Length: 276
Ligand SMILES: C[S@@+](CC[C@H](N)C(=O)[O-])C[C@H]1O[C@@H](n2cnc3c(N)ncnc32)[C@H](O)[C@@H]1O
Image (cartoon, rainbow, N blue to C red):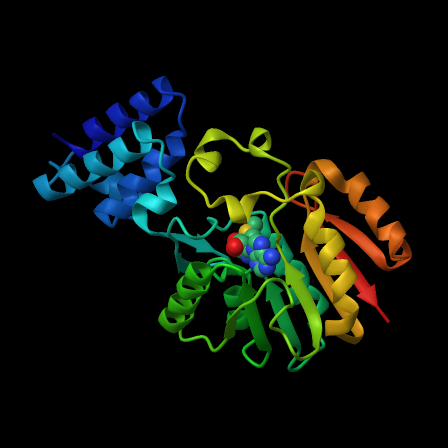
């Protein structure tokens, strides 16, 4: 069987099963270790048997077992870096790259900022910041020991020096920081998650009490004890709850110090608070 025949057949099967065609492309390219150009060049070559078997195993896991491609492969890409993922951590999302982008923009003038990432999961945000700000002093915490283990493994792999800690928000944090970043859990319940997410990603990374807003209250309540002045907070927010977030900011008297930045789909996505 040629690459062309299998590729077109699996894409057709994905469409019939109402799954993402792009997932087939990722599985195909990553398994064959091809760029898209390689695939086109090799379109009419026969697929070696070992590659065929591996593609079919992975395709079945995606189509029949409803497992995300990133967990099947064991890695994903975030802000240009390859990050190991497993079912103990959320799969880093492209929209979270906006948080990194905004943080880097805010920190252009700073030489060695002290940054803490609350709820680091795979370490995606902390790793991307450290890669782009080598002189930054970065701490990353998570309540899940398995997430911290994964984030630490990623840092070792990428040769990035970050201080990791198991901590319930700030409970084990003793120093102050110039910047707090976080993409906290913010889904109100299972009804807000699609099945691929609900059935695979860790609930502790997804759901939060108080209609998904609990961590915004908690972080804003505790932040003043852990933030230098001037200081900066950047939080990813649920796109459908910007009004609720604004109401929380008003409770803390922060509405005039805050801006909400949009993502590439023009949705409210990143809350930036400047303390001075
Ligand atoms: C939405 S995930 C974000 C993961 C990663 N920062 C990212 O953007 O891909 C939220 C993370 O917060 C962690 N978490 C949940 N409750 C926490 C708490 N009370 N203290 C610290 N981390 C917490 C979860 O384990 C999870 O890794």
